[in-house]
Image (cartoon, rainbow, N blue to C red; front, top):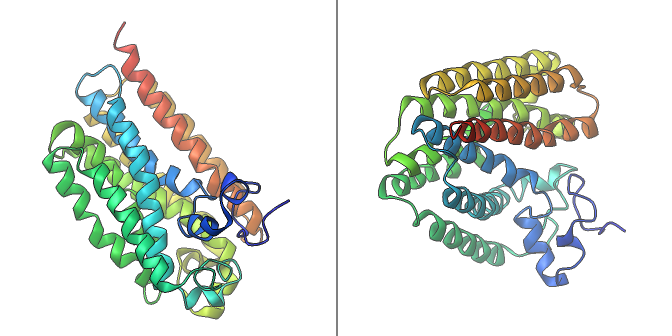
Length: 310
């Protein structure tokens, strides 16, 4: 049976709502542990970047230690980002149906407890970041300004998803920085493509809240595009593919990477075709499907590296 305190977009029957101590569960919800799609979407640009660096550097596979560190860091920093977002948005969240049962607006956690939890997650993320080279560490720290800005953007900027994209796509720079101790144009192109991808999929996600957002005065790309939301997402995804083609060409990727990118593009096109502004549950399914799309692309890039062994 679903936990009555779980949120509408949480994974039903998730272990965080079943086997953990009851007193831990509000904090796990604050970190969105029962919604793993968030850390997957934060992680995937990191893994793409690690694979792109391996392709450009002639390596046989993405650095496995870096990939594991990115995984741990994505979980920690996604949780920290969500905690920070909920602290800032605790009053707005009471006015949106999907968010009013979050731990802070519902009173399951106090502000002081949320702040302590935010610090603990930040320390965990810092411990991961310090395992990389000095340039990658500085690159990671540079993302904090964008992360801090994002929760406020929905109050006055019609496309807050662009700022979310700047933050969530940052990993597209990190894998390259960790591998080379610098940035290169392939990583920049991958970053730009990842930003467009984030704007596209988060526009689909925002369709769930479009009516409540209008009542609460919250701005979003879904409201901005309105009846032309399919076109808006299609443009975002087209930019994604264009920038990724550029990144692959500059990194001298092989056929396997481009085939994977083609499958990735078809997956995004399928999402656009199935967008329905009046189907919130369908929007959530399409949003979550981006994990599979991203893993397909990463697998193709990794295969491209492995094929260089032969």
